[in-house]
Length: 319
Ligand code: 8YV
Image (cartoon, rainbow, N blue to C red; front, side, top):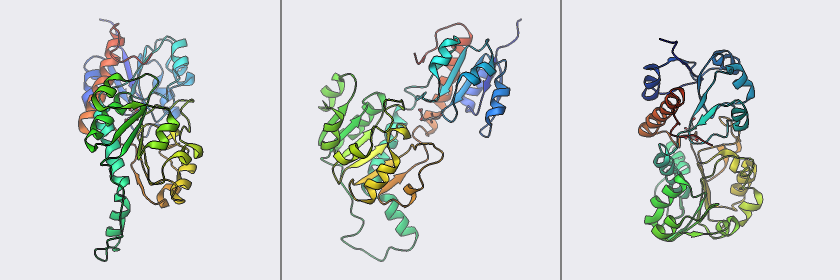
């Protein structure tokens, strides 16, 4: 029998996926605190690498792994951390984990939308800090989603599911997408519009785009200026979609209604202005963090590695 292939999990893969890999391959895992030098050293000689959005998969890492490397399996649907050209040049397959996190992420977008619209974080903070003095008809008033015009920016899998979840609010649904989505139009009466039109008309704007050079700061000061002063902005896509400084300013100057954010530029760092900005619901990138989703994502990572190392087409190639 030949030597078993080597798979290096550069940070962490949950047991649901790790066990599938360990049954077949020589597997090592560095853990969440792994630093870059440690990753470069551990990657040497790997046939497969399990990666995630917290670090760059670039030429340096691929060269440190060596020419036997066959697959980079990214734990996540987004793969903006992976240099696809560098992988292609070296003949390395890249895979991701779509579908598994569609429900979880769309549900978090709705959670943030509702929390932001009613300023749940602000109201809860008042309660926890002893500022609840009794019933006050003017206090803690927010926005209703019932009857709202809901704008979905990027109507892919997650945006489409989000649209399905909010359909019960009635109102109108509009979306942007490179391709028309006849299914969303037929099922939810959705209308495809341009971004500026969507921003002007929406009471809730939910972002569901990947982080690419083209989508960087799609929502900047100009875009925020088009939104209604009562509109809620939700971002569960990538932090780079939104210009943080411009958003903080828009909230502070009451130029938009509220914001719900799961992703940030430069995370786990984020603009500290968000901590003191009014009417903002914040989460530490937990879009896919349900038991079901993260286990399924882990299994998908493993299924992709196994397929490539056994000489088959992976289920989720990204190119
Ligand atoms: C993942 C995400 O948790 O899938 C994505 O693109 O942003 C998250 O849902 C993350 O990628 C884990 O690596």
